[in-house]
Amino acid sequence: MGVKANISATEFPKQGALAGKRVAFCFHYDTARTIEGVVLRDDMEEPFPHVIHLDDGRVVLGTERQFQPSNGSENKMEVDVTVDGRKYVADVHEVDGAVTVITEAGGMETTTLGGARIESIARTILLRMVQTSMAQPKAE
Image 1 (spheres, rainbow, N blue to C red):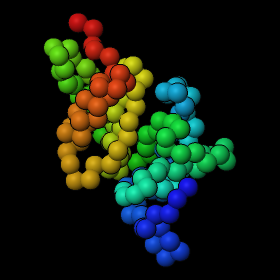
Image 2 (image 1 turned 135 degrees about the horizontal axis):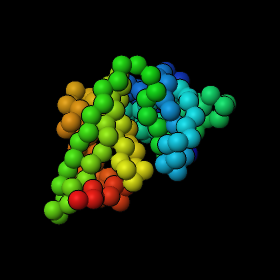
Image 3 (image 1 turned 90 degrees about the horizontal axis):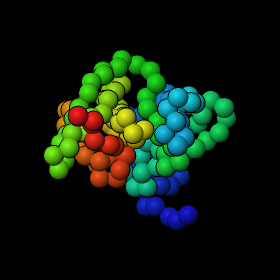
Image 4 (image 1 turned 30 degrees about the horizontal axis):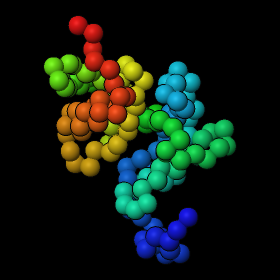
């Protein structure tokens, strides 16, 4: 615990597009077993937590899970990147400004658009997932 200058009785960090939105939440990349919930906090500045109230009553931090938006108008696509001659592919879902990238290896990351193009953000996330072994090369 600590003290953050932007959190007080009258101030709070700026909230992102996921605040107040319903999400599907899973543990250990087990996307076959999700729990619905609502994002209570989506800080866009320090201290940056995602806090989610699950429908089963638990409150969890974004660092304990993987989640994706669960309702709204959804755009779906696939993106790919090539790293060291190997091609990596991921499914991309965009709902109400929240972009979720899911790899066949079970990796999943969500972020908000913030004015950028979906494809650009999705490729950036996929590259980071490749670097952290959350994606595997596509079999030729």
